[in-house]
Amino acid sequence: MKSNILQLAIAVGVLFNLAGCSEEKVPEPTAENCAKGTYEKNLSSLSKEANRNEFIDGCRSFNAAQEMTEWKFEKSPESKY
Image (cartoon, rainbow, N blue to C red):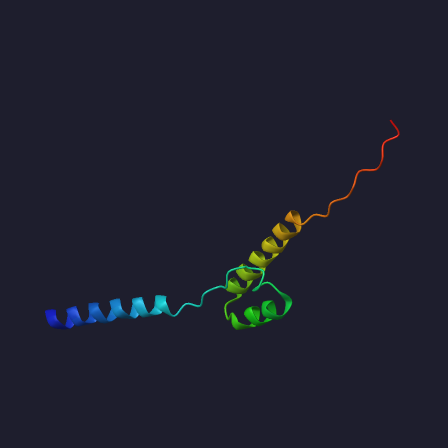
């Protein structure tokens, strides 16, 4: 009887470990992953809605950070003084 319980406990432990390994990973928001072509590809590869939302939010914040750091030098207008 103890042998059956031990086997069941081991089987349940292995099952939980394998279930944790099968979760899909959300791609990291980078310039490459958030580019138009790969963005759609990465988005369609995600099966869970929560993972899709996480990837969309990550790319939005990445693109917003990129826009904040990009700037163009504009020369000051000449002063009359």
